[in-house]
Image (cartoon, rainbow, N blue to C red; front, side, top):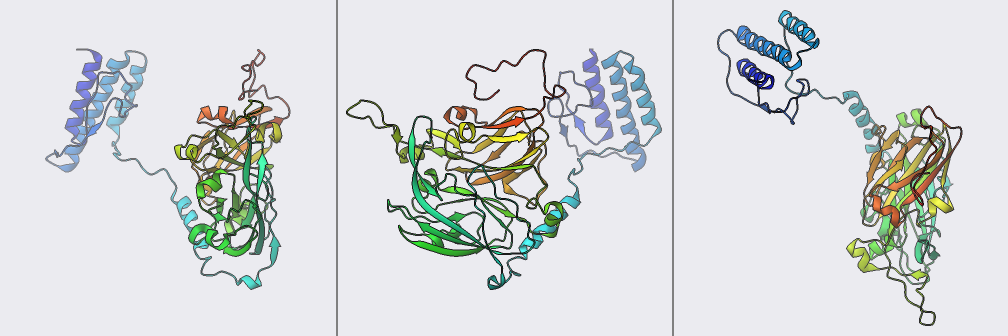
Length: 468
């Protein structure tokens, strides 16, 4: 009988004698400490040892341990057999404890801490300050990739947000222009920053001369439609509504006038960050909006473009440089382009992100969709902290490589610039790089050959969009 067969027989025999767990062993040779589904699986048994409880349990367990130790002799036949012999002797001299179910690895204190913070926000609605007593301030609105400065005040305020809707012709891809529908003339719309407990007063003015109605549905607002019905404005109208912010986090906002997918696909979306306001958030990041301080913050949104084929000029026979929205393409979920910040070159040629070695960078990232899930990845870097789904109360993920963000979702990622060079932001549904989902983070500074280097010079692929 081979050593492998002897081992299988002895392990099975010892386990049956113990009356605890029976193991089925396959023909592959695998070290004993690598128990798992590839070579063994537990099968429960109803047999119970007889006689005195302490003896009936201890003797079979020791027998099983001895079988394992002898099996180690047949498996190794090397100087390690002395170690196995010593281990078996140690087992005989001590009581053996076996744990059949894994213990929880998540600390209870962490969950209790989050629950305590959540309770603070649960009480906001019932203990809201009178709006008439709140100090008034105007929101600082920024266009991507810029982010407004953190809010450092420790009290609630009435925050006024002025939004204007209008169409604008943009160079959506390197080949085609496209008439986008915008908030404040940009795609994405402005970044809005406020604080939990604030009351946001939205004043939406519709300056769209094509006659389309517009509104705002903010995922940060509590109430039917996220504010859409209260803010719907026809051409030339202006609507004002107020919304108390009860939940901290990073949220997408968009136009929800019918048909909703068309308004989103045409560029009417943006991000709103609601800073946490509980005592712990003030203590850990009062000057960074309730999060750990970083050196730079950026605003990036992914979206899709659906357009009809360009028309051909009858006189020149050349295709037009302007394209129009395609509803059928949107229904098929087959985008012509997938872009960051509204156009193909927004984060490459027009406004690449920048940092220096040693700096920390935070990206507020949203996915407007309207159809595709994004797999955000920065080639050559790691997200030191990830606030998944825009959740800023739970402990962040650590050292994450790629983050999934669904349509209408958002996330916050922090990274550190260590080695100088160009880092590429991509949707790791990687064919989308050829549809425009590419951005650059240019890092300047001293080389770090101790971290990244070679005696040979780098040789990126000709025309490569990803590595430089």
